[in-house]
Image (tube, rainbow, N blue to C red; front, side, top):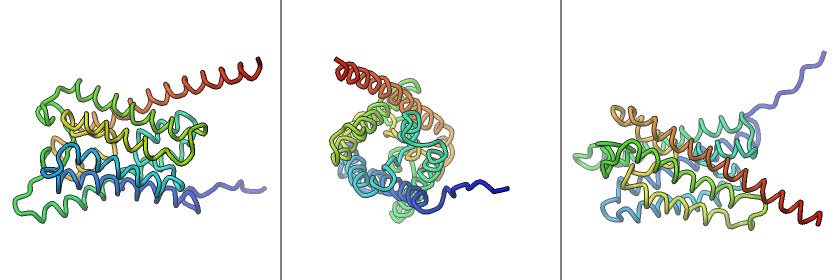
Length: 249
């Protein structure tokens, strides 16, 4: 009786994919959150938004050929629903993304604590919050809509830009610009999550209300990712139907 071969999810190329996702998420949080925490008072909202966006562009070209550069559980979920990635790999991606984000946030916090009198807060550590913890004191509903709909914008850009019919080699630019735009709009409302891993990183290090409100910044972006995947699949199906009809004419 032969024993069926079961591939090791951490072997060879799979290990490198997970390593790339961990590294990419670490870099995104370290550079983006780091800009907000260490230089936010100097570069402002626009500078912070571009820090996240440009970092994503850089990572898209650096690790995109290895893992696809999801570095966001909402993107990974959308990729799973659109049948571009298998469930096991998607779960692994999400785990390492969260680990990378926590490491990135921890390094930023270690640096920030080097300044005398630093105390982690929504204003000083980029923590995501709603109600009294929102930068503009926006309600829970406003925060949920902001996170879900702007994540939808980012994710559908990722799905479209990385479609097999899209021009090769340019995906990183529109994706990075989409993240920049979403941060520009969402920072005044929630400090801009648009990525559950990015929210988990600083929240678990600070605890308290940051963890209590964390559910919204996990659920809302994932909802946005699900909706984006649904819209994309409808658009893709319509395009393929139209192409088939055209070919048969």
